[in-house]
Image (cartoon, rainbow, N blue to C red; front, top):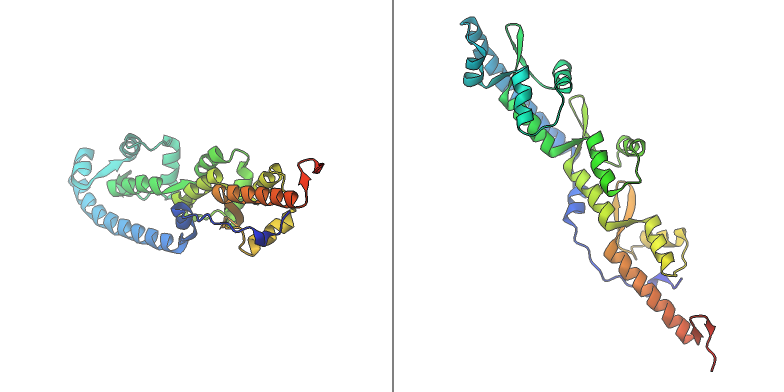
Length: 259
């Protein structure tokens, strides 16, 4: 393969999705989440005192809901389902039992404040569960299996945060992984494309070029990726250089030129 320094890649990639991924601050996400939870706890404490007073006055559920936006477990489930959240009643009840869905107890019944329900919906918009993230990513990368994806989450190459008892993956992470699978090549895939173009190069030689910055690339999830436009320019220039060298040596496509 021609020496790498003869090839200058001119393509510049400005990728907002990858930039958001690389600038993701998990500490800031946790901090913001702590503030939200503190606000909810304070609101629930205030509502609890008022609801207890109404209970003593034997107010019915309609009054609790209308005056303090408190929903019974069944009404709360219907509320989030009506807003488009796909979740079984059993799973919702499980979250309540584990305390991941804050509630207040009025008399013998549990009630959930509308602010808590809205927070559940907001969280759903911003985060994926590990399984949901895998299912979304698999659409762009069908070869990955769930076990391998979990391994990447555990190693931190797929960033995640633990909110309560649940491990969640920010939407920006899933967007970036999906985007990269559709628009970038891994090192192995890039080598395959070069070999298809008739360019012979070993993996270690190719990776040295990446190390030296001769081939623009991004490091995402602990792995290096080359944008499709960059790779296509590289292949085209390598093929053109190979042809020029063959021509200068008096070689045709099948060997020495004959007069």
